[in-house]
Length: 169
Ligand SMILES: Nc1ncnc2c1ncn2[C@@H]1O[C@H](COP(=O)(O)OP(=O)(O)OP(=O)(O)O)[C@@H](O)[C@H]1O
Ligand SMILES: [Mg+2]
Image (cartoon, rainbow, N blue to C red; front, side, top):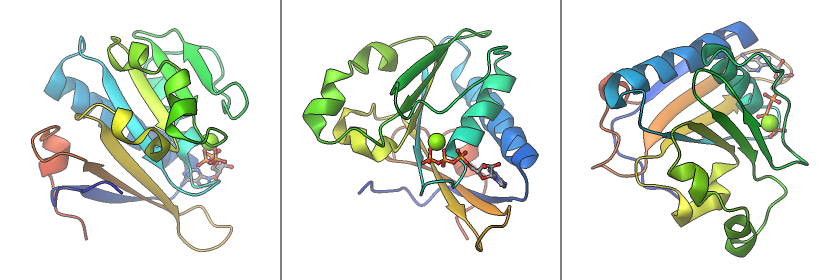
């Protein structure tokens, strides 16, 4: 699907709290690298229940969003006010590039906020080249361990500190 550069990082989260902490750290590192003016696009990948919405809830906390973050499975796009805007999109129920195109995501791609897209792969080529891809995987059945990996789709984009930390295991 996406051609990952070999520079990427994997962590194991053992709890919801750890996933929230990871979201905060990733955001902080991206902001340190890109500044707080530039928009950040995160494409979140992983099966149902793998922790994508939980990660966005962590982003919301880090952005001082006071409103509760719920899954936009039916609303498709939820916007929250924080120290910078957070836009949470869920493409699970959206199929085909035309339907994704009809959501007008470009407005958010160019925006100043943080845009997190669950099932982000469905946006395919619409995603900006500096999109950071985050992959979630539940380890074991019914447990709380999640493997979370970060990668960038383009070797020229997103060569930020995060991507340079350690090679994927
Ligand atoms: N380490 C962990 N990280 C994240 N979530 C965890 C973890 N351990 C347990 N969970 C639980 O797993 C579930 C993750 O659900 P979440 O809604 O975040 O998944 P999702 O990937 O957004 O699924 P969907 O594709 O259906 O939207 C939650 O019920 C959460 O409490
Ligand atoms: Mg979700």
